[in-house]
Length: 283
Image (cartoon, rainbow, N blue to C red; front, side):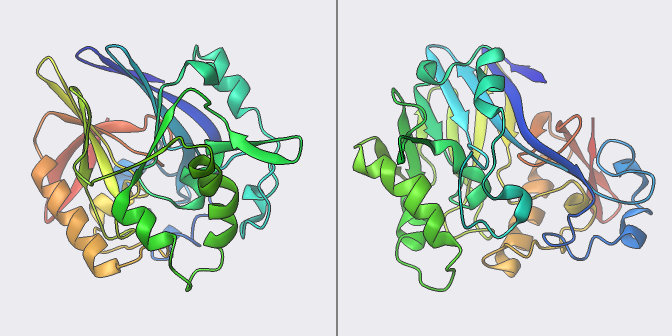
């Protein structure tokens, strides 16, 4: 799946798609609560009200640049709390190369935040050592995000994530700490969208009068447009996360900005419009 925004091309590379089993992340999205949101069906929920979700990377090609946004779960990663995320042996790198993006051709890795399903392919296991998957790339991490997670002690599940997917990048001298509004290149700029994590960012794309946004996880699923108050169990600050959703969806409603969801399944992208007191995604 691919989108053109002026001179910028965005390509989705899927690692994992699921239907159902998402209550651990969005507990309020019961089948009974989802079914009345008819516009979610069939792209974002099935006829039984089960949510469809995706873990994918977004390859962004701008003039002279090849940027991968969020690197999914990765292979061989241990101590992940979710069984289907633990010790994976998938074909993500092969699929990336088959789509025309061999790992050595990528010049920038951007992580919207540092949760487990956004940093996994930062590294790969070679001869018992974690080495950068993208050896010619600079890895961009938000300064606020990194400083928070590198010093926190309340989330023991983040410790192995840092050990195998973040610190090896710093050890090889490939990491750059950037601010929440960092300009990556003329066509791409970060935008603060905090609440899910302390330094969470989204990505704004602007080229030849066309605009798009890569969400990151300020919204995990389009159902949060219908219910911005539905916070993820992974939200660091649920009140701030809800405020961020309402602010950003409100600003996007009726605006011709293509919204590309980091976990949105199926069509993945669309335009936000108002729907009564809330919002919906038109694909």
